[in-house]
Amino acid sequence: MKKSYLLIVSCLAFLGTSFGQNDDTFSKNYNPIRAELEEWDPIRGPWLSSSLEAMSKQETIPDRTFPEDITPAQMVAALPDKTRSNMERVVMQNTGGTASEQAQWSEIRRVVVRPGAGCGARSARTYGDPHLVTFDGARYSFQTVGEFVLTKSTSGIEVQARQKPQRDDFSLNTAVAMNVGGNRVGIYASDYPDGDRSTPVRVDGIAVNVSPSKAYFLNNGGTIRVSGDTYTVSWPTGENVTAQMRTSGGMSFMNVNIQITDCSEGLFTGLLGNANGIEGDDFRGLNDQPDLRMSAGSDPFGGMSREIEQRRLAFLANSLADEYRVTQMTTLFDYAPGTSTISFTDRSFPRIHRTMNEIPNDQRTAARKRCEQQGISSRDMNGCIFDNSHLNLDPEPTPIVADPSQGIVFNPIREPKPNVNEVPTAVGKETEIRTPRLTPMPLPQAEEKPRKERGLTNDQVDPVKEERTSTPATERTTTPTQERTNSPAPERTKPTPAPVRTPSPVRTLPAPSAPRSTPSAPRSTPSAPKSTPSAPRSTPSVPKSVPSRGGGR
Image (tube, rainbow, N blue to C red):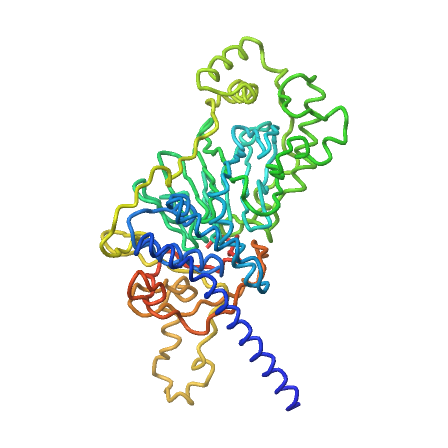
């Protein structure tokens, strides 16, 4: 027994030493990037180098200490050519080492090398009632009801959509949920998961308000912006999702656009195709049926009989829907108490598939004119005519996603100034944001002992029971977010999943380097990134590998 114990201790010591050596090796090889960025800017540079390192370890990035509200990828894209080129050279030289080192450099490579490689943007979207355009340009109508994976990559990106019926024959997108570098973000046009109607945005299950004048910072490096009725979510690695809020017949819905780049890593799957540049292979199974097959570039709303079109729509609504329908274990959405993804599922929808052949010629002509006036492309024209004729939906051109890094000028800064999320206020006072516990709090030990052993007489009030009965349940089962103090943040540990379900990881990355046994040393100057603690954010942090989901709050 003693020998076994000693063997276990020796193994643990060896692993700890190995992890420490790996961390030291990575840090040494990463030093040239730190030096390059500090030479570029003594305040922004240390933040960017620390952020890239934190992303490589799947850790929370430091707070911004400069006025720009951009992501690490957006800052890298705006770097001087010489600085970025020198960083790329260092990244490309570090291709060996242990598995954990390779994983770290791979994450950094996703951000640093991409802009210098001339990667173009590639978009896909779901809009209208709804029509889908894949990353490779294939187009189809998807009249279904439920929650589905729009796109998911092996690098960790995932976006899901919720479709609800407007009538017996048409459905619309009413919510979108996504994994943004480990933060779970949901935007709801309807069916809010809680009683807060002041904002459609939820971050890790908590309602957050996004200001039109400033981006909302996600603690893993992403941002959320709002302009008018359009919300834009940016990944720390450069991808974007826009959700445009709309109404139809009194029902709120959204059009969703997803933008990746030609250099986005990982293999993609989902309703929006595999993003391999080949339009004709986005629908497995459909091309095996000769009468339903469509050539690349063909219009899915024209050139076929009503019967063939209905058969094609039925195939997509059944086979494709079942392949990419989410489950309660894979969903990224939030839910009100007593609801789940099943509550939004109807496999019998639609009752009938509507087609272009049913639209009278005069309606088609009038709808075409409205679509042309809004600049709809020829490939999207029949889809626009379809939406405008059947549901009187306004024409929707492909949205243009603004890049905050375009034309940005980094003016010199004399000293760092924290740039963090505003603390929510209510009636002029700070509102405490509370994080739901994932496991019930244990009963106090004192309550388990008899009153006599605790020195209480029969006529004395039990202080433990008094506290339990006078404290609201929500306060007993939640813990407040860490207050903004100058003390170091406690070491984060992975929360225990709720007993009713065990969320599956959304990122399939190799294990990060060794966890730190003590909090990082306080950060004192921008050039020494590990000398003072970053100010806690107004939203709780969750592990990047397993964002919590479902069940509401």
